[in-house]
Image 1 (cartoon, rainbow, N blue to C red):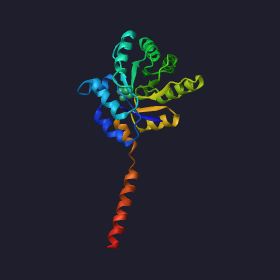
Image 2: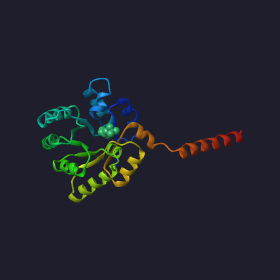
Image 3: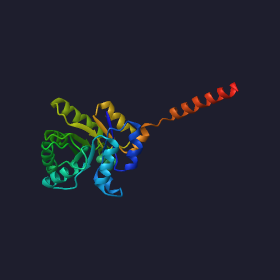
Image 4: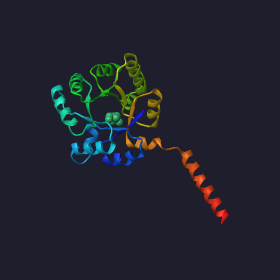
Length: 217
Ligand code: G3P
């Protein structure tokens, strides 16, 4: 499973990219709005750092405008994937951009029917929002399972990008389910490293080693 960072904060990417575990980045208007500076320059910097797909979302609401904005975003860097919100305009824009060879990530997907429509217009990725479903007592992972089942049966090339991830269990569940990609806030990626027994074990290894060295003196 590919691991993306869900962030527009360049220091997050600078810190995580050297670990060698990051395959791409997703941003959205809310994440970019938190950052200082020119959004296009931020996207370009992220593309240079990660060298993989970087989702940049349109803020237009009409299909024709989404296409123009998507073309502009795609011109920032070859790694840019244009993110469009699910809906009639987004679906039309997805088809038009895909026909021009621009990869599209259809976002704000909350049902298998929406994912099916996105796949039918050639979306490179669909982004089911897991955490926001869990927040309203609906299983986000069940949605991922249903989408994957449909895509498998109909041999859609569209990749399932698990989004709105809130913790390590979402990541593990997505991986166990065979999801193509999981995009995580930096703090969730940090949490994947943590286990108290690893810390306790390392402290003991080092203490034993130091004790043995001291005994030899
Ligand atoms: O990038 C889209 C998605 O991951 C947003 O997550 O936490 O705002 O529901 P969240």
